[in-house]
Length: 519
Ligand code: HEM
Image 1 (cartoon, rainbow, N blue to C red):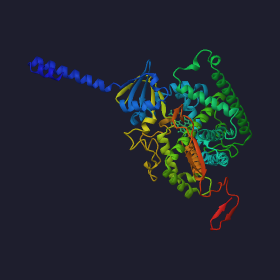
Image 2 (cartoon, rainbow, N blue to C red):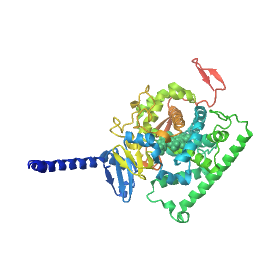
Image 3 (cartoon, helix red, strand yellow):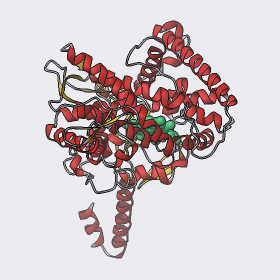
Image 4 (cartoon, rainbow, N blue to C red):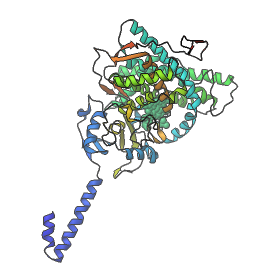
């Protein structure tokens, strides 16, 4: 075109005028092309067998921070750009719903906070957030410690029997036991038994994960329950869970009615500090169905996420002995034999950085889902109403544009005297708990829970991958699971460790070296 334009320009005034028009048209086409979203189209088979976020990472390196991925008639916009993520999650959050996620989770969470549309969400978020006040989270420290101690008892038995342990399922049980007590004061005691209601919870969870990775919505097929035995099991499990929740709610209502409640901002019943008790005592006017949806949502949101964080943290630690040494010396110096308290949380700085870094490499969930409620601009690209959008936290957290050696596990990348990394301090390149109005309500809860578990376990044991452990691959549902478990050999640390004191010290005594021991 360039030569042609030069030739035209040499043909006198008319030719020059034509050449100008042509140049303008070329510029227009170039501008138009730069505004067109890059498009990757693929065969759905290419992403089967791999967790979905892995091929998305490869596509991101080719197509950039915003591109469209098309499979036959379906298309998704994939976002791996921090500024665009900030726009979606914070600046124009109102322009987006939870889309497919809400459709998938409806069967188990109903209109709970995670899938809720704007109207329900506004009311329920306002009711639930105050329940997770500072005093409540501080009161949960005792629960985190006691539950981790139950896990220690399990590990001690395995050590005494010379057995290896599958840590992923143990972390899942630990966090289920914690969240059951924390949300509705129910003791699943799944570390001791896994039948009945515990099994029902896992059936529901696995079904939610299966639906989130399914290519066709098999559950909507007519007579799905008649065709698929698993769907019948899901229905029976949900019934058991709902009945149990109804009983829990009725019992709690009765207790609250009998109490002389003096409700205030940081209200907490000493007898039952659960979120359910807070909601009922607050006089929250809510239908039983909505309350059940809220409880179920909190149970699911707070369970496998934290379990996955612990699983991948211990996997990473098993690959990084120098980090373990630093972690153990911090815990020894800060806690000694004590149970962690809320005051320790700010002093266990390196432990926190280990968890921050683990959540960078293994974000839970690795992808956030949205749907455009109106046409909008994502940077220079346009999205249309109804477009489904995946914000890949995995890509953001491993982007070579945002991180030095992004694949390296390096807790030192977060200075100990710097601010705790979050979406605000990292300008939306780091989103372990999301950001904007739909940000996680349990971020502090989950952080303290994880610090407590990591500190107590690392203080007492060394964890190594078992010699015959299967390779630690990834598979995904809502969170990143290992493909075949995390089989570890656990050994007691050589350093003599006394089992930590549970409650406030009952007896104190002087040690030979003059220090005070508490029993
Ligand atoms: C939302 C992560 C623990 C309750 C979220 C979101 C993320 C997240 C990324 C945003 C989802 C989105 O924008 O689509 C995590 C991680 C956890 C954790 C990594 C553990 C380490 C918890 C706990 C609870 C909880 C312990 C409850 C006690 C919720 C709820 C929402 C949420 C209710 C929905 C908030 C809303 O839409 O208003 N979480 N979470 N999470 N999380 Fe967490």
